[in-house]
Image (cartoon, rainbow, N blue to C red; front, side, top):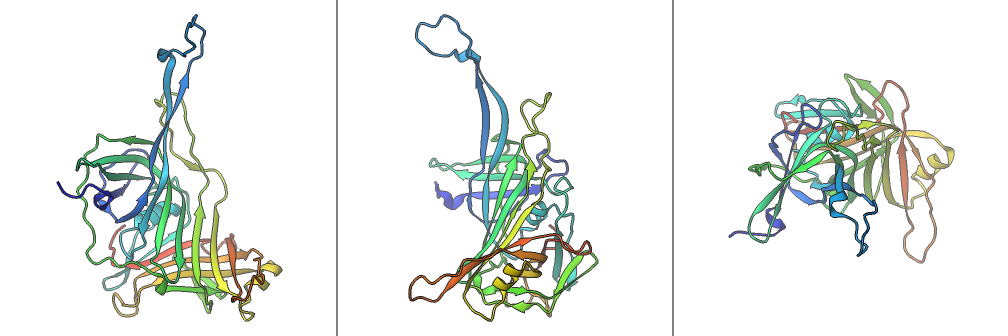
Length: 344
């Protein structure tokens, strides 16, 4: 018997052609943690039957609807997560050659009912008896995500998931992992505010932004989805989740108070500005193309932060930028990667 702990856990995933129709997973990424869980609603009849002991009848108990929810946290590496980025924002992108072996993918926010927004996810959970049990979830949509952290830490990314159903009958897929994947860390973090947005070929870029000195940066997204579409003739399984509200995307920055940085002034004035957060590895794939995970928002509004003296230490504060839709020309929110992934 080999290891029987979480050391031998695994997570695989694949894009579904038709939302909710499970497929055999063939993409794998090391996981930090996961909490996917099947939830089944039940009902208990309470008809009176002349009880002499005060218990409801077992024969009047029934299961009704089924759903799946939970989080999956991955190490944010330079390869292997494109399908999740695509599902997270409803993008329909495919990677293109940037130069040589460097490939660029641009994920602009779109309709999460589009092709590629639904995943089958399989988690292998090890038992103490030495068996890694497969739990397979179909119809998984991303309801939220969070990526980032301190400049002193490795970067992890968490995806919150809503799914249709669980099966333990699908065989555990054989996992394989990239031998060259690099994890982004806080040392790779860059933040820029302001600048001039422009968009060409579906890609939004920001020119001449001002670099910010931050202690941490966290990008968060919440996708409002109609997740309880339960109807007749479906055996308690939901229909495809669809967008039913405005997205809530934000970027949270932690800084030491520096009067030369103008973020609080932008907040009090209600001024819209561009904001970029990205992690870039120091060794080029080829030429001037480095492994990159970039988040771009051409129009954000900063919320007024609390800056207060609390003892003799250096003053620090946290400020939140809310993503808004500015010019119709630009992507309101964009994820861009440079990697060696030739396909998602």
